[in-house]
Image (tube, rainbow, N blue to C red; front, side, top):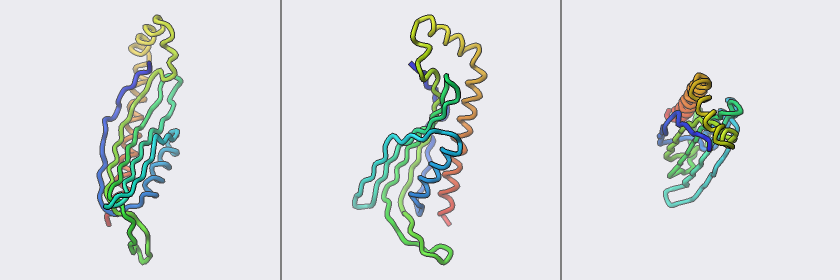
Length: 166
């Protein structure tokens, strides 16, 4: 069984006001591609209610760091009370969305994801020794890089949403 280590606990970004759903999703997709992650969409669901649309999305982009370790960033997006409005910005009419956004980001480092070290009991013991004494510096480097990537994504999303406040 692969081991999953949580590197960054769920961190939430909350926003209420004007924004563009399409541009927000495109920002996340562009960031995922630029950092070399493989995009995985677990599900995207949209429903219409009295107050407005409710959009729920779960994304789990991952990056294989080695044959032994991979980084996973779990992104949960909840957009509620989403309505389309027309706004004049810089003298031009623009269609935007108005509503509440909650984005939760969590990072996980998964080791032995191909289950190669579990075929026999002696391999499992060897893996434990290998991880504890030999591979520790590499794993801590992977954790730091994943932590930095998660923080960068969070800051990019915050900066994007802050553009619409003015």
